Amino acid sequence: MSAAAPTFRTYVEENLDALSADPEREALVHQGRRVTAGEFRDLVHRMARALHAQGVDRGRTVTLLSGNLPEIIAARYAANLAGGRVNFLYNKLSADAQAAIVRDVETHALIVDPRFAERAAEIAELASIPAVLTLGGAKLGEDLLELAAGQSAEPFAGRAQPQDVCTIRHTGGTTGHPKGICTTFDQVRWFSSVMTEEPGSGRRQLVCTTLAHAAGMIADSTLHDGGTVVLHDDFEPGAALATIAQERITDLFLLPPLLYQLMDHPDAPHTDTSSLRTLTYGGCQASPARIADAVRAFGPVLLQGYGQNEAGGISVLTAEDHDPARPDRLRSAGKVLPEVEVAIRDESGRDLPAGEHGEVCVRSEMIMQGYWKQPELTAEVLRGGWLHTGDIGLLDDEGYLTIVDRIKDMIVVVGGHVYTTELEDLLNSHPQVLQSAVFGVRDADRMERVHAVAVPAPGGGVDAEQLRAMVREARGAMYEPARLTFTDALPLTDAGKPDKKELRRQAEQEGNAAG
Image 1 (cartoon, rainbow, N blue to C red):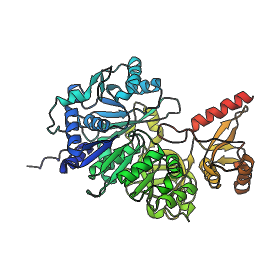
Image 2: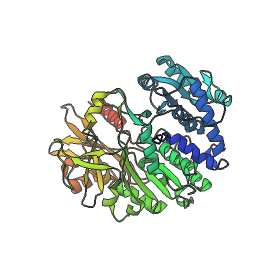
Image 3: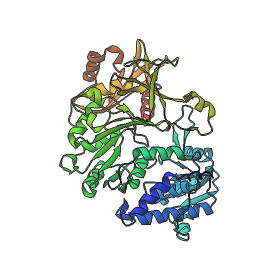
Image 4: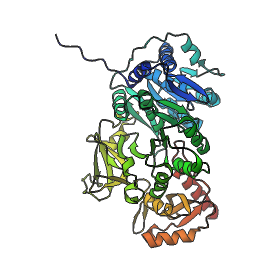
């Protein structure tokens, strides 16, 4: 008689096992509240039963609208444990955009942080939702914590199957319709196993960016490894520095613009950050000059991760590779992960040799299942088992991957192509420039013009003509911005990336007003 096939266990069940190993340890910290591993584990099981009683099962979608609460991590775990797929709403989207996503993913239950109750009421008016559940008392829906309190904390057996959709994450669509990226339970479990370290490593992670993004996935890894997750509702550099010192934080994820704010804060030079072991950055392009500054400020703890929601992790630039004397190496996204294949291809699909620019194409176990209900778009980017990332990059002779630009961000000018990140790196190398953003704006003749916005260092006297002259000398007239302005801070998206759409809108508005 053949042996029975092993039962599939989700990433949630594996994390709950880890929490049970030491139920008295501190697992989560939020605004002075300290939640033990056992308390968190019990809450997940109680919530899973409460959600299942509300009809959450395999093939049902739960949408989360929340800040960084311990209870929202528990709600995600509980929904996945019940077999449901989870969709996180970015908080800074409009009510119309959020309602469109809620409808699109066929939301069965909307789980709401009471601080967002008014927005949830707006969404509920715009979209039909069978169940609205709140994490505490509010004027709408039912209190999920109250429902969970009446349930048993006995282990709830996971109901998901490996190929069921575990998460749907949204990214902007060129048509204005957001793209929902589907990841299966099998893929999430595989990715979690890649990220985990040895248990008992004493990790203490500060989360000060949205749990809907990379910080949430890293938090799963921290909890799995027996560590503690300290939650901030938002990023504020002074508060982050104070928490690093007070809580002896070992792990932190930031997008590059937030990393720059951290090291530029007046408290940074006299804050004890010696507990930091891994300061991971990614999500958008980083300036080699500023990363070199960060290495000097925080020590050899920086780690760059390059990936996409569609592709998972692709490459890593290790702490050892962060040599301030090697700006060319800091410009790269590191070496491709062992579990990932990368090819650089031209428009005809031909593989290009080392050193040549082309589209970065990826093949791995982590590639998305597809875009939610957008088969045509899925077919455009998933071809022959390869994901076409939309990034322009190159591989060097040593196997380091460098991302040059997004295909859609590349500026087509008379004489050739301007790669925006190359120009940003050059502008950022000026000692009186902290950060910059480069983007194309079409003129009255529909020709793209290079625009740049720079953040000057405090007390600096650099002007636009000096920067233009530097660009002309270093890269030639083709790269010289047609318009270069200054700002105190770049606008950021909800995920913390420079918001080039907003900068382009402002530039077009100013151009129309001038016209």
